[in-house]
Amino acid sequence: DTAVSQTPKYLVTQMGNDKSIKCEQNLGHDTMYWYKQDSKKFLKIMFSYNNKELIINETVPNRFSPKSPDKAHLNLHINSLELGDSAVYFCASSLRGGRTYFGPGTRLTVT
Amino acid sequence: GDSVTQMEGPVTLSEEAFLTINCTYTATGYPSLFWYVQYPGEGLQLLLKATKADDKGSNKGFEATYRKETTSFHLEKGSVQVSDSAVYFCALSGNTGNQFYFGTGTSLTVIP
Image (cartoon, rainbow over all chains, first blue to last red; front, side, top):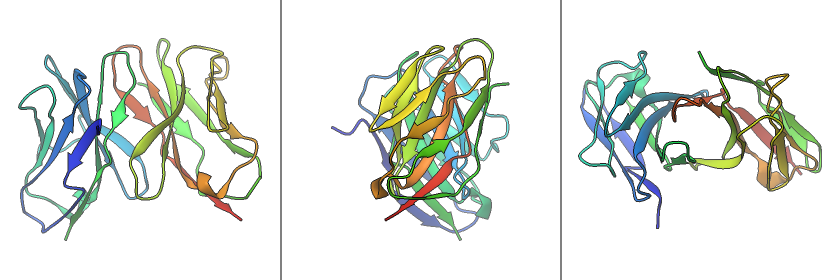
């Protein structure tokens, strides 16, 4: 009965590779998000997406792209990975005006 | 733009000590305010929230009051336990949408 799930939980990869992190929510929410938590624990929103609008944080490199096959999924694709991309990435979802639920996080390590 | 400023950590307390973690915000309109907690190795969990001025959110012995006059939402607990050791995030959600603005997080360690 997991509300927001992410896969994989851990991802170790080399610089220059392309990788994806998957996110699924079974709450019927209309909005999904991706957050990045850096080594200092600072949590920063990357994307906010519903079926009408994609809001991109302007500081996010265009190597990062969200892809939503349907309302229950928002995957994060990262091209040409760099060392600085190492972080924990959190998916989240909500209904407009409602509580936001977070996934367990994906720890990405780029070597 | 909207933002949240949270006291720097880390914070180390003895068991049963009083806890305060300061949080102030900048926002247009009437945001909702939240405290999230992240236990070691786990994801974010909502601890408490307040949606309008003078509301008090409370959960697991933690409390925070939405103070519009001081734009603050300080987290307090009268007697901390070792199991409260975690990172605490103050956050706000503006009234224009569901975007969240998080503080930098405050790491709390409670020692026996």
